[in-house]
Length: 108
Image (cartoon, rainbow, N blue to C red):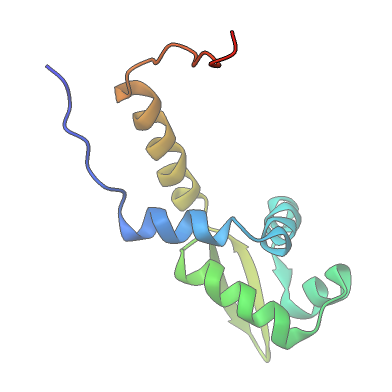
């Protein structure tokens, strides 16, 4: 019995979209180590706060990061359960997709 394929959820799609930008990948790499304030991220990445805020908003909408406010500063950290959702999507894709033979070039 073969599992019927379903389309990825909007959250999976937005997660992969958020991961398609190199600056966002850099933010994720920095947040792997520790929670960071927006001001620290701006300094480390050498970007303006307005540019970084745009990217953080995209990542937050995709639930890849979470934020908390302390005084006037906002601190960001990874939302690891959402990364598990993306990993599970790939695991199911690998598990339920038929293994296809390699394609042969016409010249061979």
